[in-house]
Length: 256
Image 1 (cartoon, rainbow, N blue to C red):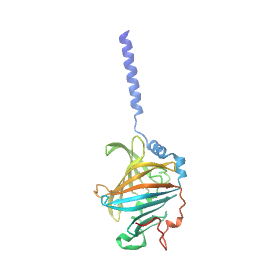
Image 2: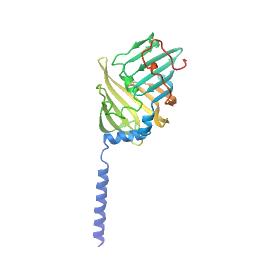
Image 3: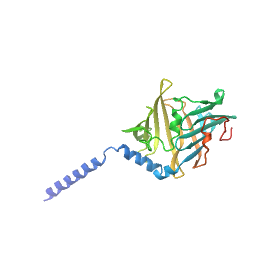
Image 4: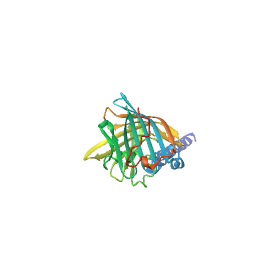
């Protein structure tokens, strides 16, 4: 009798283990994207966030040089970034159709239109929600590639192929499902490049979690730049003209 009970117990345990193993099947793209949306605050909160203004500092050359930094975004796909130092302000902007810049640190103080290759990064920056939200509507393809180590974290790895052919590998934290790294591969001016962006220190603004620590640069480069956001404002009024190629150039932040 005891032996029969023991055999029954072992059989039941094995059955439970088998069911548990089945439950450990890899997540789907839809499941991970849904968790990413939920982690950021939910679809409604993301939809309600129509504009955002980020203010802080940009650290270059290992933090030896500090510039005042500001970035503004407006749906559906407008963005403008400023970095100021010693009375000069670098500007890059995209209005959903074309990009332009002012590069006083390189001796070019007049606005210049950017090439299609140079504007690729701005197009990605304009995404308030990141590359995963509404990926079908953006014309992207997304594939789940399992997990990969990111500085000791077994992050979920998703491959995002954009409609222009550029590829971004998006790494999600396995516990919080927020982006912790994005590795983008593209061809620019005939040369292949990989740009690695690490994201962290998420804070909730306007019901949405956004990263306030951003480190970016070519993969493997020792001199990556770092952005530290001190203040984020949600749904601030933004005039569309600040994103368009200008006649006169308005500066959005005090110069240092």
